[in-house]
Image: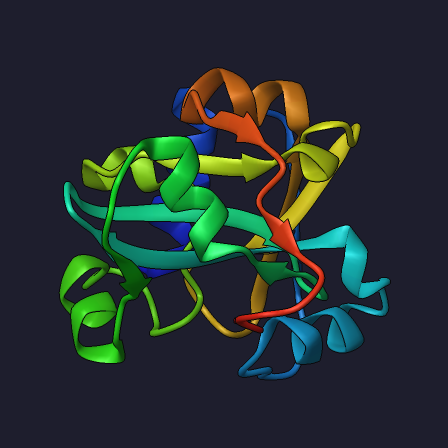
Length: 160
């Protein structure tokens, strides 16, 4: 079963209505938005971090920056950094590197979603490959991912 088929099956099993599209290969979230012909702010990306308590996932718009110090403050942790590619590859062996869907909860990690993203009716995201995007309602996403919602976007800092 392909990467995408497994993810779409997961959405089906959870009763989540979705749309799925395929575009030419795109390596970054901004390239994916261009390939999908959507505004970068309408696509979310999964940013993986490592901290005192282990790995976690931050979900922000493709054109936003993650505020790692703010995540640390929110979680009450002292040490936080971005995960490196080797760590991400080991954490998500069933996804192409950098194309992880925003379901960190399925990998045993907390999920933080930016407050602006949480206010949207729908979200779009890479679904395991650099060619596939899924769109689901934010309500359905919140139901299955159980994210912590907080303002986690920086105006300066780490662009990831």
